[in-house]
Amino acid sequence: MKTFKFRFIALLIALSAVTACSIDDGDRQCFNQAAMTTLSVTGPTETTINTPITLQVTFRVANSCGNFNRFMEGTAFPKNVVALVDYAGCDCDPTPQASQTKPYIFTAATAGTYELKFLQENNLFISKTITVTAE
Image (tube, rainbow, N blue to C red; front, side, top):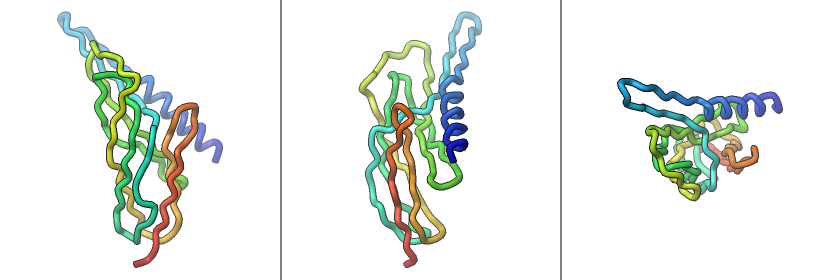
């Protein structure tokens, strides 16, 4: 399990480092993707089989060019979840206190207890336990 966590964290670091800038006839085009830390997660903790629930996930955005791309998630439980943000633009104003809130939809095909872990700063997680019952 620790190996999976380390691989997941290494993937997040690698994605954070993905940067592409090109100079084409004097025009700069800058792009960066980053896995951003979660500030809060709210929503229901119970559902039934095949009934989706929506969790509201609030995460940091580093600058004015940041736009939500998608949630990246692991395949095994407890499932690690992190917001992936695209930064398109070369002249972005820093926004150290900025955040965005986006819906994360969870659906389970079998009854059980599922743990979702949303990445915070310092490799900590916000855990959300979802109980799924038969109808």
